[in-house]
Length: 75
Image (cartoon, rainbow, N blue to C red; front, top):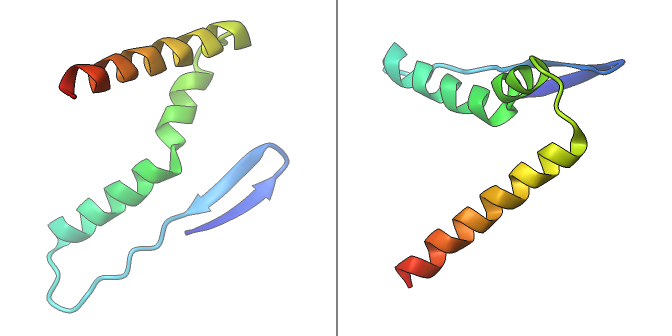
């Protein structure tokens, strides 16, 4: 995976090499995993509407509290 920074925009090129005898379904699955790791869709969705930093911080804290609660219930 290569990335080039131009101003504020990162250009990312995902390269998937097909292995011998590999089906296109498996290659597509690997591509989707790599694409998900880049976080492009997450970034686009977050940029659709402006969210104040305080609200972003609050939601991350709420998510962390929720996850911590789930972990405590299972133990």
